[in-house]
Figure 1: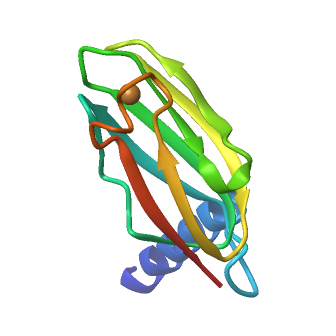
Figure 2: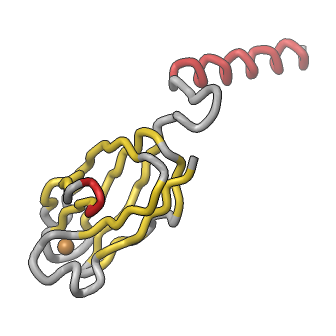
Length: 121
Ligand SMILES: [Cu+2]
């Protein structure tokens, strides 16, 4: 009975992995960064992610509107302006390198709303 239960458990895990389209063969898996925007900085952004498709999901917990751009991608706005209390998200393909994320609302970047992200193989 114990063995049967364990088998059932493994099957369930395998099903979840398959359904999730898990990464195979190294490093090309989709990654999601859940971050928070405050006045005026980002929280919960990792220092480092793996190269590939990265989804950025931002909860604006500040009292001002915020967005998120990446300077090295010709200032691409990955997340559109998000109102206070709202959430926004965007997806971007990142090659290895160093990227600067920042908020383009006037004055915010200067106030500290930027973050350096290292993308590794
Ligand atoms: Cu901002």
